Image (cartoon, rainbow, N blue to C red; front, side, top):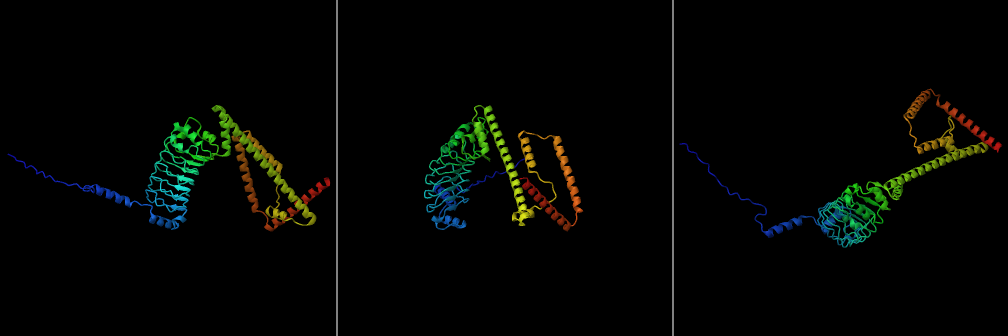
Length: 413
């Protein structure tokens, strides 16, 4: 008979322990209190250290700016003596509420981006606040701005704004000029409400809604409608609003139907093009007059030199900068006619054909060949002394010719 020996089962009593297993409620409360004490706080010692690092004053009331960014603070406190503070940097902390600013009545710029705020509050003590930056927080609704009538710039990028009703705190704000609402979740269906709110701000000049679904609305032409409704707007999203675009939008807004609006916009664009081309023509005419006046002035100086022997300084300067050379005379009238012809072709929408382009290429090649021939001739040019003598003779001959023309004109008169 075969017998088997069964293995002995050994039961081990394993005692599990944890860091809080043997602690009562009082120990747990003490532990939490110790953790809270380890969190950096805005106290007198910390403020003196940070002001020293940023070249501030140890006397709190003398500081007009204070840098408290990226320190891990959870609460705004300890600023009672900073009564003349103008700018306060608190970005990159873990602040959950706007508080502790009751004595900072002169504060103009408050930077609270990259924190844990869920609302805008307690700004009634900051009557002179001009700039508020709460980018990268958790704000879901804009409130509390009615107590800051001087507020001009509001940056609330990448928060939790997900409806048009959340923007009601901006309605009719008397002084807001820059509002950045980029990278939120404002939906397409609230496009009309958003348009109504932003158009109610009388001094709005810069508006950014980039990154919101509302830009994809099909209810109306987004950019044209916003520019038409916000009369003071100078910058929308990613580009400025120039005067030419505003004039086209104003014309577009006068139409009743989409077809009429597009027709009015195209007509305004054509008018602006004609006006610009007329301006170019006037500039060309003014340039031609300047050239003729300069020539007349040089001629009078030459005649004076022939009569009195006195060389005017302007004439000498002209000779030093642009010595006379053997070259065909430039006809200003011909140049002006060529400019007018080019502008007229542009007005008529002339499109050059491939054959004309080929002719231009041939002319370019011929010109290059001529330049090459001239360079070869330059190699065999006479010495410098001979060239100077020839130029002197040329100048004398030209002056004599100008004198003869001038005398002939006098005889005719």
